[in-house]
Length: 472
Ligand SMILES: *Cc1c(COP(=O)(O)O)cnc(C)c1O
Image (tube, rainbow, N blue to C red):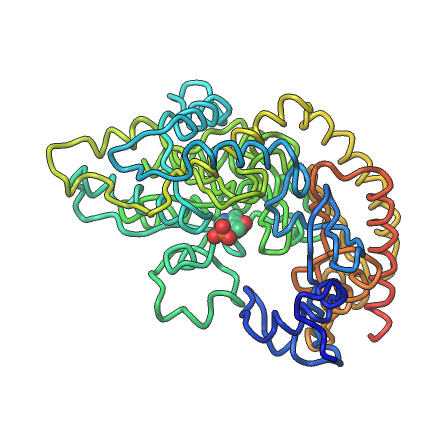
């Protein structure tokens, strides 16, 4: 007799979920064929997840997988964190959603107050003083770009400033505007004919530093190049957008904080806005609550998302200066910022964000992260000795391992070998979810990760690297 589709033995079978999933879902950032091919170097196994518990993802059969990438860098305090779950449940019974044009609600107000109080400050500058909500990181970037452009237009600048400067190897999201200021060919190239033209300044990335050059010197050189670019296009530019400290999607490439300091000065010289995209690096990821703090710099626009809600719900916040805000106050509705998303400032998402901020305080998360980051450094150090590891670098709760053919920076593996994907499969088979960026492996775990889980992560990474490079 055929089993009912609700039979527990079927529902607890991961293969059941794999088949049902692949029959109907189109997954993000995935060549779906890799899920459909059962064998070979391009095979991408699908991991069905039934529930989460702290840093663990738990399968339908009870198997545990360590989430070493915080589910695309969103999760901070662990999966299914009860304090955030409770806050969302309570908010859902109180007010689930209300139009934010013309209406107000406490979670949106309170979250704005708290974010502004926590935001980076800089002596001699008026602090960030207004919050505009959007509902995902890319949308937040669109908001910041449009605000910067529109501000100059409202001021009546002629000829109009229409250009943005962004950094090579930067990433700001997938919508057309955000993709226009991104520089990762894999995501960008196909859509290039649709994109607006941006100017790209060299990345301050220290990995690319020429032999013997320090990370700071490398950042200074890149800042000099930025200065030249801004001079060349004086009067055409509205804003510089960048990811402070770490270009995450660009391969966890890290740069010296002096770059942001120089960039801030250059933006001031040219009277253009500085947009800090802290969507990935915000909320303690690089050691400080915001990465900009390490440069002693305050941006004019600060984009936050991903960890904002502790990884529970999509939400973005764009923090702006009073100068920006005042540029839109006018009799004309055309001079208003008419951008909107249906779910702007969703109360559930704001409640989750507030609960996450409470946890930062009650658990003293930043102090605990310092200890965790030190432990990660100690565990990562031996991996630097492996013959194919060209670089191990760290910024707070991010550690990256760059794999190359000969273990030096100039001999990348043949991409057809799919070394990163091989490492992915090897780690997954050992109960760890790594999701390499090309041949760059990284740790970006939930902050609640404990010593035993870190030890598993380090051992598995070592095993996965060994297994992956064995084909080369
Ligand atoms: C992920 C990311 C974005 C886009 O956020 P989404 O919510 O995925 O649209 C933008 N900027 C940076 C730096 C990111 O890492």
